[in-house]
Amino acid sequence: MIDWKTIKDLHANKKLEEVIGKWFGVDIFYTDKHGNIHSDILDKEYEFRSHFFKVQSHLPYGKEFLTQDIEKGLELLNGQDGSSFYFESFFPNVRMISAKIESEGEFLGAVFCYPYVSDQITSAELDEIKSKLIECGSSEEDATASCDNLKKLKTHEYDYLKELIGLVAHEVSTVYEEVNKREARIMDLNAELGNKYRYHNIIGKSKKMQEIYHLLTKVSNSEATIMIQGENGTGKEMVAKAIHFNSPRKDAVFMAVNCSAFNDNLLDSELFGHVKGAFTGAVKDKKGFFEVANGGTLFLDEIGDMSLSMQVKLLRVLQENTFLPVGATQPKKVNVRVLAATNKDLKGMIAKGEFREDLYYRINVINVHIPALRERTEDIPLLMDTFLEKKCAEMGHPLKQWGKKTLEAFLDHKWPGNVRELQNEVERLVVLAGDEKTITPDLLSSRITEANESTTAPTGNLKGINTRGTLRAALEELEAYMIKEGLKRCNYNKSRLSKELGVSRASLIMKVDKYGLDKRKKAANE
Ligand SMILES: Nc1ncnc2c1ncn2[C@@H]1O[C@H](COP(=O)(O)OP(=O)(O)OP(=O)(O)O)[C@@H](O)[C@H]1O
Ligand SMILES: [Mg+2]
Image (cartoon, rainbow, N blue to C red; front, top):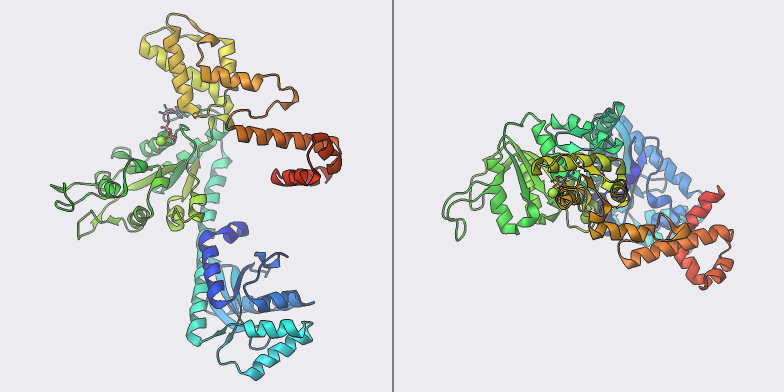
């Protein structure tokens, strides 16, 4: 099944739709192979690029005419050789284009583009379209305006448009295949979950970590490029190493490059090397990381910090296995497995044009998302014990033990710095405890005791509200909480609640909107 929402949100397609819409005055939509529409054109607020299409969709039987046309387009795609066609719609001389979405020979759906006319159209023919519109219920004014508005395309123009629509369909097919591959892998891995406590040097026994281990077992052996995502200190680099040391490349080099540590020019020369004389200071040839890591694994850390021009070069190595050292004329060939990591929101960056979507899909063949420590608190005691043992051994102390209150404080803390922060705290405590056998809570660092104090302060029924982070965030959270509870109490009577809270009704409504609390009302009523 195609995930149509992903398809609709595909940045490349959206951009293309926008450009095509602007140039050709047409709208683009998707249907599955049964002809069901999976685009916003059915939404009431949808803004049509074509006036004609808009007028048609408001006709009493506008939707039926469209359905009929879709069927016609699907039949063409199904029955004949070729993957895109233009054909006449329900309205004489008004044309539509359809292009096939398919994967491995399976017909999945179609991309449609509508409407345009040939530039050979005569004014008599245009009048015919107009009368047909009026006959179907349009006002004369709308019919005239929409016919005037129809784009008249020359042959080479609509041929080109057909090609573009074919491209959109192709992009949809590719993404469908990528998503499918990923899902098959995930299903595979959910099939059998074990109870491992560690994988390579990674420690954790929570269900979420078990899932990661299984994924890692599956992917280590493959040659796939892998994207590792997670907050600071969640173990992204550890995961990259675990993949390498469990792969057939384990005896070759593992190299980690922090992309954010270099400026563009330096990164270029660091990754791809340079030849003597390429720039001032290049006194001899220098091998880049790609060449040094040949046969092994290259870990590109903080890939979200890579500039767009470097992204292009990276894409080329990934696709063709060749690269050009700075100043060189001959490309070099390499065989490197690339792993990448980031804690940035790459999808958001794509939307802003800061990260290339093609590179994203190329790297993101498999995505390993490491959960933050607060999402797997059951791992905390295990991590504490492991780091405790390690540090005691390192310092030559007999094994110490945790005081009950210390353990509680660890469990209550939200660990913004994740495992790294937890490890630092354990090591610090071992040092501070000196010869004491038990680690008592008075030794805890203030950031842990203070944060815990504020969350355990007498907040009554506000338990569970996050009082850390920015003030604004905390205030908003509190406000949302008060409104949510108030709504329940007042049985969703906003006038009453606004009086209770001492705010105007309008401002309350705005806030309810802002925090999405109306939805809860709906859910509660259902
Ligand atoms: N699951 C884990 N088990 C054991 N140690 C861990 C784990 N996760 C993190 N650590 C410890 O925390 C440190 C940080 O891990 P790592 O450098 O892999 O995180 P990262 O996600 O790359 O962090 P950053 O975003 O800061 O680059 C590691 O050196 C390791 O000591
Ligand atoms: Mg890191």
